[in-house]
Image (tube, rainbow, N blue to C red; front, top):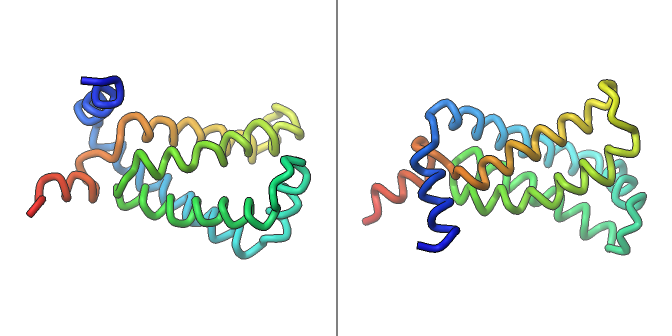
Length: 144
């Protein structure tokens, strides 16, 4: 049994039912955040342009919106939760360490704290998986 199988097995056996509510809330939050990025692409473009990553701004904006909308939906449904969570990690790392940290670690910087908490929860679901009340569990039990 390799490391990934052991992590997956540990996550499946140590997943309390209340974490499914947290997973669904996280998915809905990411979905809504993706919709808000699409509705105000100028603000997101300004954030990405200020990073000076030498990426195409339009590509980065579309990646963030796509990952948040479809990743959030997949996390909320519990479908490929680990994969959808891993897709969110680079976006949230960028949000925490490059975008929001410029304003400092004050309690007034709510976007930094929100991004940091979301990053921690996403990493948690990348490890523990989707849980009992999810599409992954349903597909595993009803594989016909």
